Length: 81
Image (cartoon, rainbow, N blue to C red; front, top):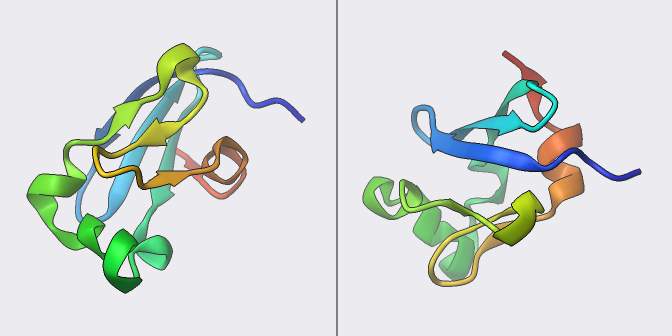
C-alpha cells in the first residue's frame, strides 16, 4: 500500500514526531523504539533529533547522518492526533 506524501515533519517532544500528510491527516510517531545502538542512538540527542527533514517528494524522513525510518512504518505505526 502506498502511503500519502508527507508535507511536514516536526519534533513533538522527546523522540516524538508530528507528521502531517497531504491528505490532511496528522499523526504522532514515537521514535524511541528505534533510538538504539551507536548509529540510531544519535537520535537521543535533542539538538540532532530536531534536524529531521522530509525526503524529496514527501516519501519519508531522514537525519543528516543518514538515519531514516521507512514510510510504511511512519504511517502504520503512528497514531492520529
